[in-house]
Amino acid sequence: MEKYSGLSLVKHSFSHHERWERQWANPTPNKKYDIIIIGGGGHGLATAYYLAKNHGITNIAVLEKGYLGGGNTARNTTIVRSNYLWDESAALYEHGMKLWEGLSQELNYNVMFSQRGVYHTCHTLQDMRNNERLVHANRLQGIDNEMIDAAQLQKEIPTLDCSKDARYPILGASVQRRAGNARHDAVAWGYARAASALGVHLIQNCEVVDMIIDGSNTIRGVKTRQYGELMADRVGCVVAGNSGEMARMAGFQLPVESHPLQALVSEPIKPFLDTVVMSNHVHGYMSQSDKGDLVIGAGIDSWVGYGQRGSYPIVEHTIQAIVEMFPTVSRVRMNRQWGGIVDTTPDACPIIGSTPVKNLFFNCGWGTGGFKATPGSGHVFAETLAHGKPAPLAEPFSLERFVTGALVDEHGAAGVAH
Ligand code: FAD
Ligand code: PYC
Image (cartoon, rainbow, N blue to C red; front, top):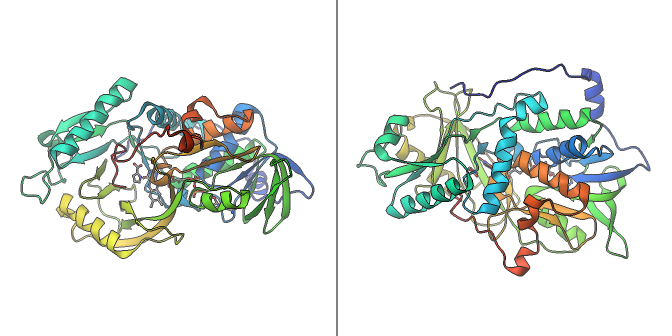
């Protein structure tokens, strides 16, 4: 089960007290920031870190309405992969994957990135064809991905039911062996600590309730519930499921819908699954955490909502799928179930870049798949904010694509059951 990338520990240059002081900073009255980042999830914290580290901009405030990393970053099932279909998205996610591969060393914080492989099982001929297409596309892009047949799959995952008696027998699978998972909160803490050490202000319990936009349609700052007005030259908004609400404050509409997405974990059991298995067809996926919990998820609630919980029929359906694929876990008890709010776009791809308001940038629309993108998203958004124009990797993901029609359709091709 131990498949972590190696760590080299370097002494951290800040005392515990200094770190505490920085991470729990309050805004200084009348201070103007170069950049305000709204949202202290993984993406916002990664953005702040790369702004400070790669662009030398440290007069930054990250404003978080709750606690750092308490949104979707804390609620996701941590699958990291880069096997997307189209060149634009494959390039973006592969950029993230490469950053993941050195992240523990970069942050001097064990993010427990474990390249244990991710399998997408195929239960129909069409599933096989879709996955073969994906594998070919990935190979042309220089991204690892391969097809295996059911006999090979059975050898690699003995507890998976690959028999012909299953309701939807498995015909084969695609597998990205460099894919895997990581520890969600460690990613947020790692970026937070490293950004704080570089001088970034991390302000928790600070909810943005409005935008300050002048007569020339330029953003000047934000209004917060706890600290009044905070001013900045540029504002980056990275609030996942709350993006639509933020756009409303800024006076425009985004093509995003907010949906609940839920997950659940079991009681801890002995190690029996050292990889990640996903089925688009029977609609469920599972991995096993280092504590032994089975980490299980499925699709979004198809209705919109802001409740951080999922509804019952989905979880019941998910468990049916999991028990079908892994009959051996049928008597395992579930410990916890929760939900997050994900922001979905019509082409299942993110929106990264400028908005109708000058100096206001959005990074949103990652939907059900943004955890894997955390380092890549932060990296390209930092470049975008630093230069005031989209980073090259972000260009295909502009808001304008919904006007020009240049969509990057990753529905289904993402190989996940959403
Ligand atoms: P968040 O972590 O949600 O951060 C946004 C922050 O903005 C929050 O902390 C929130 O409190 C803050 N905020 C909101 N409004 C305001 C305001 N007005 N003022 C100040 N702060 C505000 N992705 C994968 O790649 N792999 C997976 O396996 C996976 N599984 C998932 C499973 C579940 C159950 C869920 C819910 C999501 C899953 N995702 C997965 C998606 C992934 O979690 C998200 O795309 C990703 O975490 C988004 O990160 P973020 O930093 O943008 O958002
Ligand atoms: O994007 O791989 C993914 C994913 C799995 C579960 C939720 N998202």
